[in-house]
Image 1 (cartoon, rainbow, N blue to C red):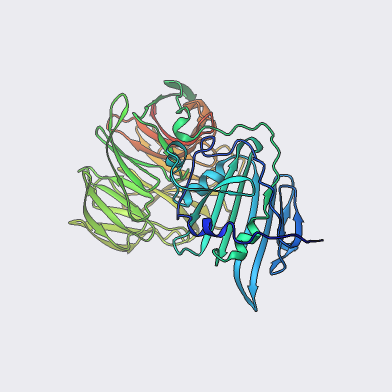
Image 2 (cartoon, helix red, strand yellow; image 1 turned 45 degrees about the vertical axis):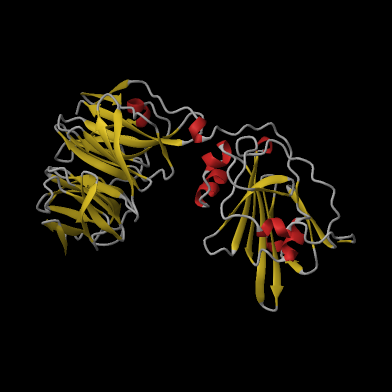
Length: 482
């Protein structure tokens, strides 16, 4: 229907023009705990839209496609466009999502907004939009303005994205009619990461697999490591030193009763794997990123076109891999890498590679059966056995092997998807498996990395959600007994 009224033009324009690229404010620790009543404002002449979670009146100069909408009790979206001939000058998308604050916090992070500064130090600017205090962010090009707010007691995140000429007075006219209609459901969000309770497992666990008594001991970090990318955790170890690659930041720790941070380095390119040789050279690799060779915390060499790779402990060669492509051998001479095709594996899509002193473990998917397996080669590239490669439901069927290590007892594989630790003899004979909860007391971790120590124990790194849901955290255990 049409609504006739008087418009007080442009009252929001000046505020929008002054918004900074990243802004924030402190209202109930970064969220709004109630939906305050808006001042009564005359709405613009136009057509009223009423959804389950918001209302708005759009003037005739705007278009609204009802087919490009969603509206239910937990999610509501509407898109409005300001067009000139066949060109879209401005698009305004309104979204309300009911549920956990994860999306809200991820969006803050993606926009470059420091949540800690926003919450604790009242950094940046807030704009009231539709009755909700919203932080704003602009994309690097400046043509997209995002309003983001959290109404905690309603368990709702509101987001308005204006793309195009967002300083046009018609945008202010449109958004001034927006009203979020959110019901207080008594929700309390999880703490922010810095206020949450770090993970503190039992000191040790013991479980039997066949005749082997497997022990695990929690190795705490002096300061907890909060995780952004669940799948990014990698480790390498030599002597009393542990390196952790997490969220594209490389850290060195001294291993004792606790893991003590020695240094950390934020990496410029995107990296996925780390490995260390017997001389303490650390190799850092990632798809389409130059391989870095570090001695201490200094980069002593870079090599292009290596891509994602792991190196043999001897430091003279390694294997580069990419899903769906033939693996390649990396040969190092005075820190200079040359590449050659190796381990063609025409019937396998390679997911991951691990290298021990005597073996190469190629984890991937059988192209014919879609079964996941690990193809084991000796250091000369001769196939020795296959682990897994069984139909789902078989005792040794696999989900996604993230790491395989060689120990005195044989091979240990870590299955990220199945949250299992599997054991084989060196001839490929399957021994058995243990659940993550049996060895680590964890709930649903992503077990991503492992490294064999000089004494034969195995350090295992994984990401687990905290009990209070304030963050995901990277934790480390030491395994013995196999």
